[in-house]
Every structure is written in structure tokens, then in C-alpha cells.
Length: 272
Length: 241
Image (cartoon, rainbow over all chains, first blue to last red; front, side):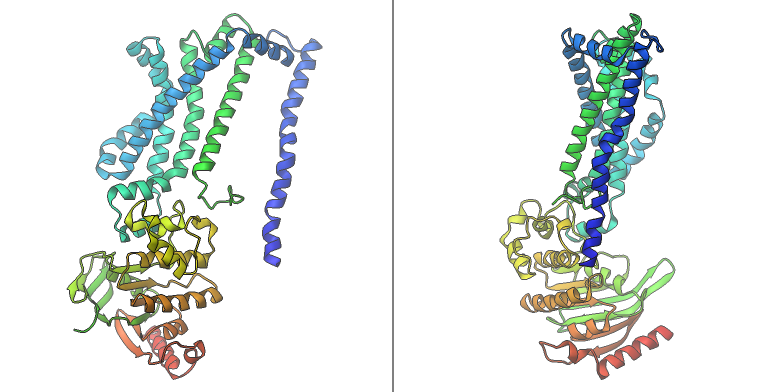
């Protein structure tokens, strides 16, 4: 009875702080918004540099009727395609490197060297090779997003518990079965973390790519807003990027929790 | 040569350090033998060799008079920890060696029944208690229908009450499956309660004790008495030496 009450006592205060965490977390942004609104209306802040939040909201509403959906769609599509290409390659190559010593000896040193190159350094080369079309944007996003997953897959597989490998040996699992039933599932937590990092990087490189050359997308809105001195458009695009990034990360987190429901960890102790 | 399972280790060393020397251990069919000895005396190494997991030694392991080469489905192994794969269900864990889809093998459900976990096939390991997880590990060890079962301190991580139940479970399945059992343990009471023969290990087999008690046994039969005193005495001498 005693131990039981102690066990229950642990989640309770956490749940309690959780309930209060949401309003507390909103306190600062709300204060900033109200402060900005009041500051602009009172003339303390120049409205051309920091438009009032209400004006940004109006700009978003205006854009919504004037092709915002197209901007969001093309940006999201670029992120998805670049993310899929980068993640797909990273999973394949990361697994190949972690599962086979010879592949590792051949490929890994080169990838580690490439990883050291800031991804934006590729931009001029990509523009030379592919022009200013869609291709360089997608390639840039894929390159930028490749390494978190590559590192997650390879370190995840290498870090698998030797004791579990021993069990797999004992039951004479073949190489394919070992990879499919033991190594890849064991590496999944690290892979999912890599995928989440990759997704946020994909958004970042999407903006970089669109800032360089684009006729549509949220990055285009950003540079268009700057060129026409419309800080409200720039801020509207930033707000939309924040929302999209948060939504995609939450979807990824939901996927992670679903795929890793077998984990017996602190984070999902409430699962059945 | 009437024995079912013969282990001979001429020499086994880790680097320059000799672990086992000129050790011969023969198990007759249906026998339960316990290995005791100080930590680091080579008990677990001997078990790894017997299982075919460790092949870096001089000597041989014979099953039914035939030399085994490495791991064999006829020799099952149960580790100190359950070592279940957390992402596989209980049934998938039990049928691990047979590939995907094998969890629907009727043998899985019958083994689950035998270890007292009927209906747990679809559960995940995280939903099991320590004792339940070790029961699943026993069922997995039995799934390949081995003739010899090796156990490496299998009940040392559970509470005393669970341990007693698992010991009785082992006795029962060993009898029902006509298993020959080699068990490493720290617990002299456990060794005397379960086995027909207790072997004290110290690089080689240092002393052997026949446990000539009728089955089913009572714990009170073995927890005291001259035999336990003799085993304790020998263990103490091995420590001092």
C-alpha cells in the first residue's frame, strides 16, 4: 500500500504543473503582443518597422484571400519532397554503413567530411549546376536534412545492446532477420529523433532556398516583404513558418509515440 | 558413454588469464546439474561454451556422443535477465527463432499455458513483471524443443517468493519435456533443491555432491543438514585457496 501511494505520487505533481504550464507559457508572448500593440498605437514604436499585431493579423487575412494557400502549398511541398529524399537516402546509407564494416570503411569518412561543410556553402554550386529552378531548392533541402538521420541511423544501430544480439545469435537469426527484427527496431528511437531534427532543418533550408530565388512560397513572401518595405508581410510569413513548423513537428512526435509505443520509458509510462 | 551431454574444456583463457582448465562434465539424460563457485570461477564461461556461444576454447562438446559445432536448437539457453525484445509481443519473442508469422504456432500458446501466462501472447514485454518476463524467457527457451537446457543464474533477479515459484516451474517443465538441465547458481539452497548433482567449480570441477533426495522435494529437506554443510565447507575452502 505504502509503495503504491509513492508510485502514484510521482505523476500527480507533474500532471498538476502540466495543467498550469500552458497558461504560464502563454504569459510572455501575450505580454509581448499586448505591449507591441499598445506601443505602436501610442507611437512609441515605429509602425513601419514593427507593425502592430492586429495589423499583422489583417495582413494574414488579406494574404489568405490573395494566394496565401499557393505560397504555403509550394513551401510545404518543397519541404516534403526534400525531406523524403534526404531521409530516404540517409536511412539507406546509414543502415548500410552501420550494418557492414566494409561499407563503413569506404563511406563513413567521406560522409563525416561532407558533414563538416556548412550546407549553405553548396548553394552557389547548386545554382551553377541546376539553374534557379526547383531542383537546386530540393537538393539543398535534402542535403541539409540528410545528416541528422544518417547519424541517428548509424549510431542507433551501433549502440544496440550486445545482450540482445547474443539472443539473436542463439536463435540463429540470419543477417536479414537480424537487421529487420533486431537492429532496425532497436535503432528506431535514435532514427525518430534524427527525423524530427531533420524536419526542422528541412524547413530552415526551404526558407534559405526560397530567399535565394523563388516566385512562390513563404521564403518568397519574406524577401518580397523586405523589398517592398512591408514589415507586416515579413512578420506574417514568420508567424506562418512558426505555425507550420510546430504542426509538422507535432505530427512527427505523434508518429514517433505511435511507432515506439513498446518503449518502457518515463515519457510514455501512462501508455497501457 | 551413457551420458547425453558431455563437455570437455582442455583450456579456456581470456588473454593470458586461464579461466578453465582440463574440465570434464558429463550430464546423463534427464539429470539436473547445478554449477556453483565463486564469482569469476568460470561458471558462465562454461555455460557459454556448452551453448556454442563461445567457440574460442580448446576442447569439445558432445551431444549424444556427437560433437556439436556451435549453436544448436537442441541446446536451449536462458539468461540471467529475460532479454526479451521490447518491440516484439510475448508470442513473437517466444517464436523468435522461427521467423515472422511463427507467433501463431500452436506451440506458443501451449508453452504460455505451461508457464502460467495463457492469453499473454499479444502483450508487450513492458507490461510484464520481472517474474512474468522470466517465464516468457523460459517459454522461449523451450520453443525450439531442446533436449538440453542451460540456465545462467536465471532466478537471481527476482524476489524470494517469485523465485520459489520459478524453481518449481523449472522442475515441472524439465520433467515434462524430459530435459537435461545445467544450471549456474549462487544459491546453495536452490542448487540442492533443484538438482541431482551439485558441481563446485574452480577452474576445473573441484568437488561434486550427489543430491540423493526423492522428488518431489520439500524445501525443508534441503535447506539444512549434512549435505548443505559439506557444500558450504567446500565452497569456503575454494574461497580461501
